[in-house]
Image (cartoon, rainbow, N blue to C red; front, side, top):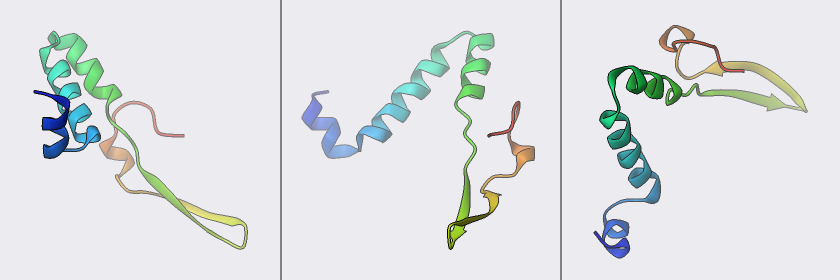
Length: 71
């Protein structure tokens, strides 16, 4: 597939997601599990008013995230 072909179909971010998933699926079971854990992200936001930050709100609950909590 040439560069021009895949750019007409999807973005670079989508391309990198597809290739990362293919690489993770090709790994042995133990390495695959570790790689999938590293791929999990925690999303949060904080509303600021008058220079003061409000409480941080997680978009996915802490219970959904294995391992360490995000800082």
